[in-house]
Image: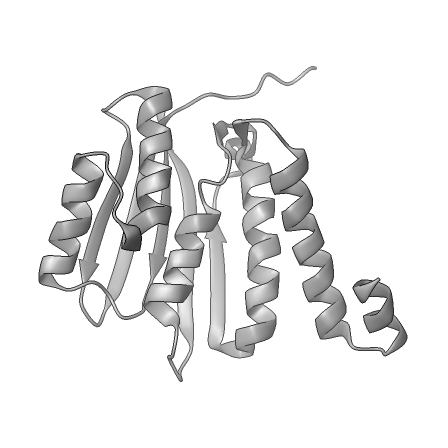
Length: 189
């Protein structure tokens, strides 16, 4: 109804946001799979970002880097989007100039490595140490729910040798990297 009203009023911003929000809700409520393809997870991330792009306009630039053959790799659902959301909330929020987010998915030996980097506020000293302690201990405090949740789900599914690492320099950037075992969906020839 909101989408149709926006279309009738010729307000494309509301139409795009409503359509993207509907897709996000459908994917989170209807899809009960724990594991999806990189392609599907990237689509959820793009739907989320289409809403944020309307909010931030040209001040938010997102780049993707991945080979086509990585798209059929299976990863836990909602792996990339929470990290991109963290970039916006903690790295780019309140920023007047253009902020950049880079999403990279690549093979590394038998593994898949997902890297999400922003050029925002960065994370300083004790705060980065606290996040790393939480990631190492597989526990979540109130402030780092998204990143710790992704880490816990990855480690529970694949083991302690996989998971999330964080690198950051205050005022410059934050890079979150997730290492997962490669698990490619079989394609029919």
